[in-house]
Each structure stands twice: as C-alpha cells, then as structure tokens.
Length: 113
Picture: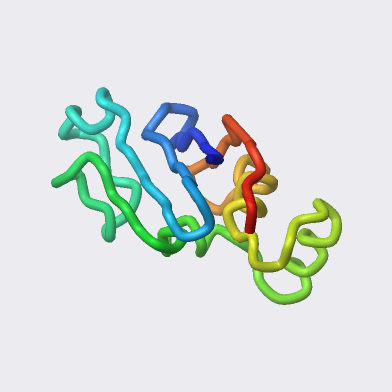
C-alpha cells in the first residue's frame, strides 16, 4: 500500500491510496468534505460522496504527470518503472505542480508489480 496526502493551497483535502497496482482510492478529509465552501478536487470527484474507488489512477491525478521526454527523464532520474504512474506522482507531486493541488508521499511500501 502506498498513500499520499492531498492538499490544496496547503490545506488538507484528503488521501490518495494505492492498495495494489490496479486498486486506487481517494478519500476526502472529514473537515474538507463537510465544508460546503470547499471545492471538490475535480469535477469527476464531486463532494456528493466521500470515497472514490478505481482500478486505475484517477484522471485528475494522472494528468498532473509530465509527458514525453520530461516523463522519460523523470522515470530514469527517480529510478521508477515506466508504468508506475503512482510512484512518479509521489516523486514529483509536491514540487511546483500546476494548480493548487499538491500530492505529498506519506507511506511508501513496495509491493509486487
């Protein structure tokens, strides 16, 4: 299991969890979820439910990753497998991302690919 804290402008929004390579979950933090003034992380994950599950990395978070040569360089630099999108997100998600959302690695336990 690997876990990331998701923040928006430094404020805790929730947690993104990878249980194994095809099992992901996003959970809104209680305070964020209950505050109607706080926006959802994404239009595809509205605050109509607290927990979202998927068999792939949620599109909002996948789209935070770089593309092309930059992605290839980052995979090589961080020694992360090309198909380990969550691993790359954990490596780069807190370093000057586009937008207000940051991804902060919390627990990094390796599991079989």
